[in-house]
Structure formats: C-alpha cells, structure tokens
Length: 84
Length: 245
Length: 114
Image (cartoon, rainbow over all chains, first blue to last red; front, side):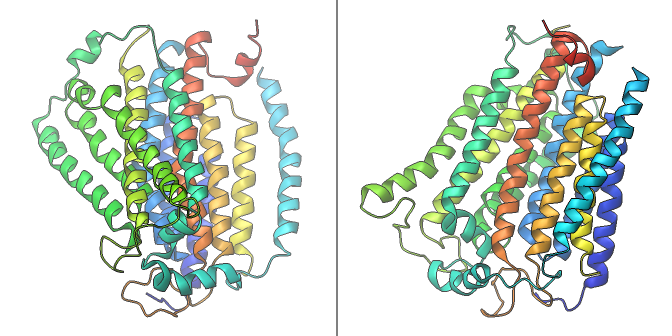
C-alpha cells in the first residue's frame, strides 16, 4: 500500500482545495453554494486519499454527498417561501 | 444598508489578513511537511495488531485506545439531535395535504430508487461490519446506512418515507446505540477492570470478530449514527414539505 | 513546497472566517463555518503525514512497514460525522428564526429585539 513520492499529486490536490474553498466562501447565493460545497467535499476526499487517510476520506465522502446537501437544501426550501 | 455591508467587508480584510499573518508565522515554526516523528502514533502502529488483533489501527484508536473521547463525541451527536428535534417541533402533528399527496411520478426513478436503497444499506452495513479490518467503521457505516434509507424519500415520495422514519421507530435505535457504549464500559467497571476495558478477549485478526468488545461498540455506534441522521432528515423534511404558511 | 499544506490550511481558515464576517444570509454563514472547520482537518492530516509511508491499515501488509500517524486520523473522522449534526442545529435555528421574523439576514435579525 506504499506509493512512492506522490508529492506532485498532493500539491495539485491542496491547491485545488484552496481554490474551491475560496469559491464556496465567496458565493453569496446559498443554492449555488451548496453545489460548490459538494464539489469542495469531493476535492477534499481526494486530498485525504493522497495524504494516506482512507478512513477520513470515506467519512468525508458519505457526509458531503448526502448529509450536507439534504439538510441545507431542506433549510433553503423552507426559508425561501415567505421571503418573496 | 448597502454601505454598511461594504464597510464591514473593507474592515474585515485587514483583520482577517492579520489573522492569516499570525497563522503563517505560527506554521513556519513547525517541522517541515512529511517529517512527523511523533512517538505515540508509531508505537500504536507497531502494537495495535499484536495487542488488539485489529488490522485497522485508526478504528482501534477510536474505539479502544481513545474510547472515552469517542463516547463524548457520540453524546455531542445525541445532544445536537435532541436540540434539533426540540427546535423543529411544531404544534400541528397532522399530515398536511402536501405531505399526503407527495408522490414521484416517474416509474424509472421509482424502480431505480428501490434498487439503490438495497445497495446503499448493504454498503453501509459492510462498511460498519468490516471497520476493524479495512477502512471503515461505525461512523462511516452509520451515515451510509442513513443515506441509503433516505433514498426512499427521494425516489418514492413523502408518505412512504414518513411511515418508515417515524420518531417512535428511530428513538429506540438511537437510545440503544448510545446506551451500548456506556453499558459495555460499565460492565467492565462492575467486574473490577477499568472503564471500557475489553472483557471478551481479543478475537481473531482479519475476521469480523476481532478486537473483543470493540466490535460491540462499533455496532452500537453504527446504529446510533444511522438513527440520529435519519431523525435529523425526518425533522428537516417534515418542515420542508409541511407548511405553517 | 515544505509548507504548502500548512499554508493552504491557513488560507482556507481565513477565507472561511472572512466569508462568515461578510455574510448576509444565515445559511451562507453555516456553510462558511463548515469551510473553516474543514481547514482544521487538512491541517491535522498534514501534521501527521510522513514521506514514503502508507496508510495505517495492516491487512495484507507486513507489520513494521512505515505508516502515517493514525492518531490525528481518528480525531478527524469522528469530527466530520459529528459536525453534520451541529451544522444541522445551526440551520434549524435559522429556519425557526425565519419563521418568527420572516428574514434570514443576520443584520435584520439583530435589530428585531423585543
């Protein structure tokens, strides 16, 4: 299970993390932000795999693809109704 | 109002910049990336397999070497779910018109969804079961089981989901899961050993029964995390579809 | 290159805090808090990493091969699952606040005391 010298892969993954985090924090529309957050979660999952942490990557994957979008979308749908 | 928001953004930039500079100054004093020499982690890597017979050292740490911290985290989860249930409890508990007639009309989605429920729950159970052998564990498996079951709402409709994910059905699972942890700990305490001591012998490495009482705690945590997540989803979806217009 | 991982963690933290400060929507605020929280995960895993070392799983791998630090991974993985429920609590507060006052803007909520 040893992969020798994957430093370029880790560097690319980390830089993509930084870009995606900037996009998530600076997007003001919550509906678009949750999609960006899902993408950010997947990029984080890949980063955790390159840092040799499969348990953490599994945890982040199941949480960021189902749990977060469901809860946030339900909240957005609920708070949108009266704000017209 | 618009000017105040812009001023707030402009004022925040130097403050956050200062925070970033402080963080950068702190991180520059750390050992370079990739040269971690912490002794505790290396020791655990070397002795977890002979001592506890689990090949997944991370799960052994979560449930055995640092088992007390995990109990605290589990009760954070429990308390947060209790908080959400209390906040979202409405006055009207009768199902509304929208909730009664919500139905997915596409047959393809219904068929695919029903298949995916089985696959999702099976993958979640597998992740939770083999947590002590390969990457996985109670936490990941619990969330995967919950996400398999919520496909019922997404592909069938609200009435089918609400029959399955009722509060009366999910509360016992959550309680049993959280209680199993404390019960295993107290059983060890009663028999004269330290709290959460392994009373059942280490087991066989590489199989489902490895790690003794860690396997029981693992299933308790999986049950509790799955039930807690389902409760969370049911509260949010009930308010999403139900009105208090 | 030595400090890229820590620099990225610091950047993500600062970006999340900035987004939370200038936020005009409680749901946007909750998501910025998750971004800040994820920076700590990156930091923890970057601290525990060792070059030319594999994952701390020894199934089929001989005991004694170098592996990264497992302690920080255990801290991170319980934290990820528990943070979902905590963010759900924040969102539940946002939904209830919207029901009572009709807005999710934190500035307008603060001015509606009493």
